[in-house]
Amino acid sequence: MTAIIPKISIKNLHKSFGNKKVLDGVNLDIMAGDSVVIIGGSGSGKSVLLKCILGLVTPDSGSIMIDGQEMIGASLLIRQKMLTKIGMLFQGSALFDSLKVWENVAFTLLLRDKKSKNDAKEQAIRNLEMVGLGVQIADLSPAELSGGMQKRVALARAIASKPDIIFFDEPTTGLDPIMSDVINNLIIKVVQKIGATALSITHDLISARKIANRIVMLYQGKLIWSGKTQEIDQSGNMYVEQFIHGRAEGPIQMPIRILS
Image (cartoon, rainbow, N blue to C red; front, side):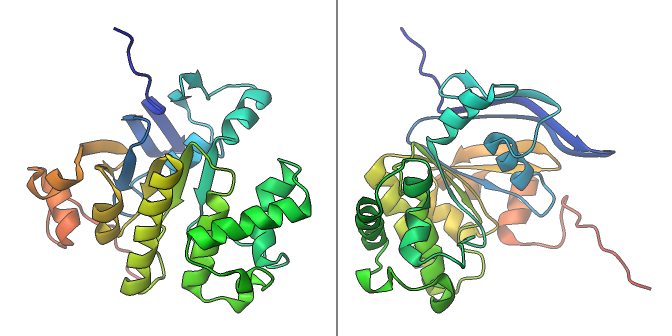
C-alpha cells in the first residue's frame, strides 16, 4: 500500500535568534485538503514557523517538505517552482497603494504568468466576484476601500493563480465581528472551491473554530496539542484550556515589563 505524502511535512524544526529559542523541535504534517489553524500567544513561534515554510527565515535544523520535496537548502529554481503553488493572505492585507484594485489582484498574473492586461483584468474581476466585490471597485485605489473590503481584495489576490496551498496570517485582525465572520465564510468558500490546502495562524478563536478542521497549539516553540477542531474543548491540556478561555491564571505566564 502506497503511503500518502503530506502536502506539508515539518520535522524536528529548530530556530533561534541569539539566545532566544523560538522553534524547539516542531513536528507537523498537513495533508492535502486540510485546513489547519495554529494558535498560541504572542511569541509562541507561529509567525516564525510560517516564515520558515515560506523560506523567509532559514531554520537552524530540521526538515520542511512540500509535496515530498525538501525545501531547506533547496535550489533557487526548486524554491521558485514551489512558490508558484502558494497563495498568501497577509495580516495587514499588504496591498500596493500605487496600483489599482484589479492590478493588485492580478499582480502575479501580470508579473509571473505574463498574461496580457485584458486577460489579467478579466480574471481579477472574476476573483473579486468570488469574494463578493463588484466590477465597480476594480479601478479604485486600495485607499478608497474600507478595511474589510481591502481584506477581501487581498483574499482575491491570494487565490488569483489557483494555488495548491494558501497561508492566512491573522486573517480577521482589525475587523469587527460581523466583517470577521464574512471573511471566515469567504475563506471556507474559496478554499473549498479551488481545492486548496490551508494553513492559518490566528489569535481569534472564533475564526479558528470556524475555518479549521484541525487546530494545533504552539507554546514556547513547541507543538503542545493537536486535534480536530471539535475536540479542543475537551483537550485535557491545561495550556490549551487557559488559552481558549482567555484566563490570566494558569500555566501560561505572560511577561510584563514594568516601566519606571
